[in-house]
Length: 334
Image (cartoon, rainbow, N blue to C red; front, side, top):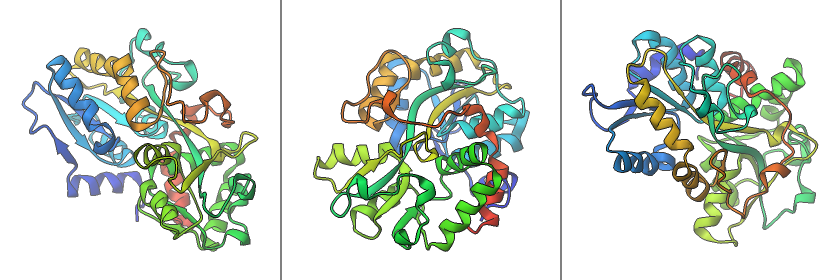
């Protein structure tokens, strides 16, 4: 279990971070990527092919990489931080470790999807959902709020991935919106209700498809990717809890430049590429996320972005990862 983000950093340093692109030869742009290689590896290779630039990519969990950056501080070799969620970006920003981005880069997305301080920018939107077994359930059968999930009816039938950074940001949002006591009670109730623990969102989705559990708390695009691969008969559906429920939280993946980078111009070009039509089209078509820039439309099979009843929250408020990890440990979720 993780006790603090610093312990996570030490663990990451001890175990090593998965890398792609070889040792840093001084010319490559070093990218710490909290986005999984299976999701963005092809896009990052495409950037290198299109521009002739060289990337050294170090993959890892967004929270772990944020902790590593907090440990390395000015000694980090990283030039760019790609994060799965706004919380990890905010944690690094709060320590003064990010470079201001050009206004033109920031203006590529709506103000709510970028840092108030102008030090990170959202790349894609991703919504929390209740995934469910379409063979057994209809939307009307489902909990209409995540606060209804730990009821007796759902005992032992629910899956979650509490080590996932998006889940941790979701809990951080719950803390901000509903208060510490409400978040603590919900976590305790979920643990007491025999919620099944999985390593990641894909494992939760697959457990639903295999009939092991009936519902799970994940991000929307994991199901969308499976439907695209296996067809409309794929047995898992997604439900967006209504009424601004935190279970429909829209978070962002995003990018930032480290303040100690000596390749800030190359870093800006890289981030602008991710916000370009080519980058945004990749996210829309391949990862099934909601593009935030370049006028690119999302996959039409997805719930329309403006119809998701996401709670109103400043994404900068999702930076309290240390406190959230502590709460997850204290309640037995981790």
